[in-house]
Amino acid sequence: MKSLVSFWAALATELGDLCGINASRDIETVSRRCVDEGDAFLRITLPTFGKAFDKALEQGEYTSDLSVGFRRRGGGLPLFLGGFLRNIFAPDGALLSNPCTESIRSVRQLTAVFGKIEGEVSPRRKIAAVRAFCEADDACFLWDLTSPPALLKELEEVSNRIVAPMLARADFKVSKDDIVPRHGPGQTADRLLGNEKFDLTYWPTHLEARFSWADWAVPNYRFISGKEQATASTHVVRARQTLVPKTMSTPRVIVMEPTSLQYMQQGLMATMVESIESTTDLVGFTSQERNREMARSGSLNRDLATLDLSEASDRVTYLQAGAVFSGLPNLWEALDATRSTEVDLWGNAGNREIHKFASMGSAVCFPVEAVVFLAAIFVAIRRYHRRINAEFDLTWSFARKLEGLVRVYGDDLVVPVEYLPTVREVFAQFGWKINSSKSFYRGNFRESCGGDYWCGSDVTPVRVRHPFPTNRRQVSETQSLVSLRNQLYHAGYWRTVQYLDGRIHKLFLSRRRGVLFPIVKETSAVLGRESVSFEPIGLGTDRYQRALTLGFVPRVVIPKNGCSEVGALLKCLTAPGKDDEHLERSGRPSAVSIKQRWMPTH
Image (cartoon, rainbow, N blue to C red; front, side, top):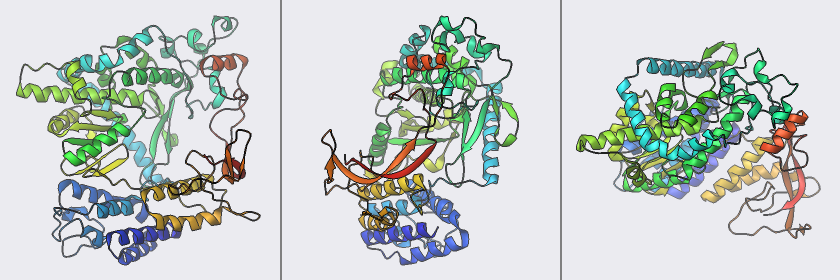
């Protein structure tokens, strides 16, 4: 923790100098409170302060309810970071007519820098996360049980006009079985890894009803003879819930799917994404830049609102998804067949039926939730216009005219401000929660897909992702530290970069060759310094005449795992590897180390 406090002090000093502020009192406050409160102050309290600051920008004043845990000056602004805040707000908390953009960027940087550090979560918070998952699922069950038929009919009508044209190509491909199933890189409920996944020994009955094992799980019908089909298996593999590190305050809840379901889900996902992105820009999957550009525009013109949903994937119900895909019968049949209906909860907490359409971990969760949210936005848009003109008719051509004004990327939404009250109304009717602390529409601040903007200026903070390493054997931490150094360099915080360079030099000190921390391009595999002022200097060349440099390079060991001859042939037909050993080694790395190597500088 001391290293993080020292880093924060270096960063605060540089930002203070940039804004003409003495940050020494703020550094003393952070040092003292870290002694009293530990890591939680850096990872939870500071980010909470930052969220309150964002909300103050949103509402145009710093009110008394926004500074929980920090002393205030006579009921006005907090004393902590007070020098920066006085460049942004008046003593009574009102936003200045011309607040200092550099001070806004500094406050956001200093409060958010540790908010995304991955770390172990307390058992109490893990249990709370599992309970929240179950409560959201119960809410889905209750919504489907009591949902107004008129609301579902409204969603269905809008979807047939807006969603159906986007996915018509995917629906046609699914009807012709023109999809390519594939395996994802992650873990599965039945604990198969790498090449092992191609021996599909479990094929549930509800999947067989739409995608037969004989057609999809073996290379061709030759391999059926003499073999017992996987559907004859008497055991049941349920989806399996797991918790992965996200932040210190909450873990990320993932539901791992059985291998056979994930295999078909991946093929459906690829088909859906290709169909949507080749048709419209209203929904995005492969690039977040469009959302960020719209957020920047909204911060400047105040015409676009950026919304974030809480528990987004856990609150899309089965009936809601069914209504949205009602005009795409072939695609809906396939999605329904690949859906998990039961899950084993984390911590031996038993199993339960799944009422949401898909949990995070399903390959189709992201595209399904995106089109469901888009359909609901257009339900709101149709209501808005029909209240003005009862004869209004929502058409696909009208929807296309809103490209650049409406966009969905997962649970990051951008909508015109004029539609926002109706969007809130519709989302509440569907049981979805808008995260008020991360949704912006009133002031000149907007955020979407990792891009934060104030009056058109980028105020996105650079974040620490891992604790600082003490030696090179901590590979993820070392890689993260080098990445942090280079991000801060490009952000212009060069004195803080010098502080980090001192730490990195100690890590990369070679007894024979000194410090191996060369200047490299960002495309190089070498852990090195990126620079806009100097070109990388090669100390040699390889047979391709590429400039080489000596540095530390992460060495990845792909685990050994194989499959049967049938599985090997299936892999070569559906997902051929790019190297000669792909049938012997596959999956995520089982071991990573850092070694000295000669590598290209670019």
